[in-house]
Length: 463
Image (tube, rainbow, N blue to C red; front, side):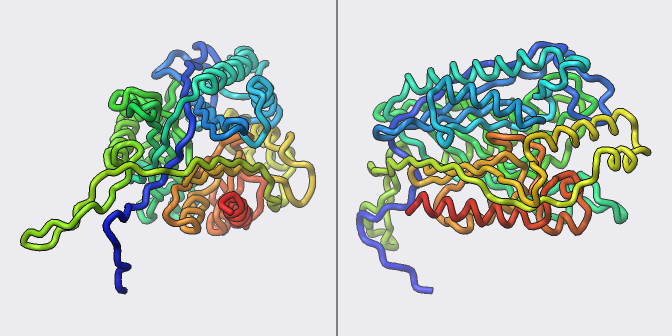
C-alpha cells in the first residue's frame, strides 16, 4: 500500500477537549464496623480496620452556555438495590441542578468496601449503611459544587497504554466452569489515560484512568476496608503528577488479576503499582499540553530527515450528552424457592448471601416482562467518546466500540448510574455455563444488543 504524501505543517492526530474543567476530591472512608460482607465464604460480616482510604472524586467539564458535565468516581462496591442508587443519584442531581444526562456516578467495584444496601440495616454492621449512603450523596454534591465553581480553561488530552494486570477469568477446570485466571485466553490490556492541564500555565489539574479489571485481589480472608489495587495505582500516579486521579472501571465482566482471592494487602498494592506505572508510561508519551507533533522541516544528513516538533494545536470544544435505553432480553428465571432448593448443598452462609442477592436483583430492575430497559449514557468529550451503563459488560463491548470508532479514545464504564449486579456476558459464556451467565437475569445476545445500541448513539453524537 502506498503511503499518502504529507506536507510541511502536517500534524500527527491528537485527541483532546479544550474548554473549562476542574477536579475536586473528598474522603469517603467508612467507619470500622460497617457491614462489608461481599464474599460468600467470608467468616466475618464487618470491617475491622482500613487498608487505604476510600475516595470520591468529581470531574466537571463545560463549554459554552450549557450545563456542565459532572463525573463522580467513587471507591465503591456495587449497588445491590435500584432504590438505593436512585436515591443517592437523585440527591446529587438535585444538589447540582443537573439534568439526568449530564451526571455520571461511577463505582470502582472494589470488593473490599462497605455493602451499599440500606436493606441490610438489620444485619451485622448494616445499621451504619443508611447513614453512609447519605454521606456519599452529600460528599458527591459538595465535591461537584466545588468542581463546578472552580472551572477554569483547560485541555484534556488522551493517551493509550497497556497493562498486563487483567487476565481472562473464564476457566474450565476438568469440565467445570470456574472463575479464575485462564492462561489460554488473551485479555484486553488497554489503558486509556487522560491528562487534564490548565492553559495557559501547564499545571496538571488531574488525570483520568479507564481500565477493565475486577478489583478482586482482596477476598473473603480480608477484613480491612480497601480500594483494592485502585488505591496504590492512584498513589503512584498522584505522587508523580501532583494532581487527583479518577479511576473508571471498564468493561471487565470476565477480567480480573491472575493473582487474587487473598487477604494480603501487599498483593493489591503491587497490582496497583503495576497499573500506575502503565498509566504514567502512557502519559509520558504525550507532547506538551495544547500541542501536537508537527512536521516542521526536512534536514539533509546522510538521509533526508523529517523533523517533528510540538506546536500549538487547537482541539475540539464539543461537549454532548445523551441518555437512552437499550431493550435487552430477559431469560427465564428460577423462583427464589427453586434457587434455595438448587443451592441446598452449598455452605449455608454462602447460600444465604446468594439468595439475598437474587432477591435484591429482582427488585426495581425487572418488571416481569420479556425485556428490560437497560439505561445507557453517552458523552462526547471533544475528540473522545464515552459510554456508561449500570451493568457488568464483558470486554467485547469496549473492544467492538473502539474498533467502530478508530482513531478516537472510547471510554467504556461499567457500574455507572445503576445496579452493578447485572452481567452482560458473551454468547460463548452462556454455552459454557459461566457464573456470569447463570447469575444474570439477561438472556444470551444482550451484550450484542447493548453494543449495537451504544454504537448508534455515539454515531449520533458525532453527527
